[in-house]
Length: 102
Image 1 (cartoon, helix red, strand yellow):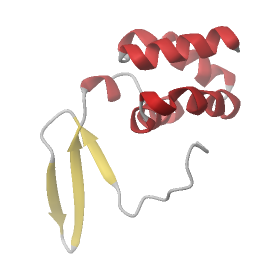
Image 2 (tube, one colour):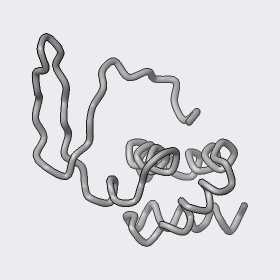
Image 3 (cartoon, helix red, strand yellow):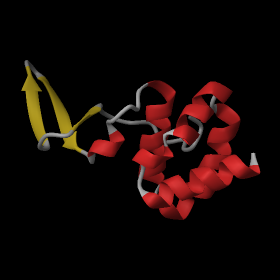
């Protein structure tokens, strides 16, 4: 999404269940509990954008949204903007403000 230059070392799978580490043969994987709003209705690029904004946090949401507005296709941006009601208030407010500026 172009928000950071960090590369994940290992995959982390998100769940509404409990966090745990699993072993599949010789491979290990992490399943991490997240709030339901991070999982509901958010697939593809919109889901990745929501999770990226959550990871960046309220202090970096405005510059992150500016970058997302440039990189997301317009249909994906509209889907993100129209789904604000499912998001935490700090994120929904910032998305609404960016949509107005856009």
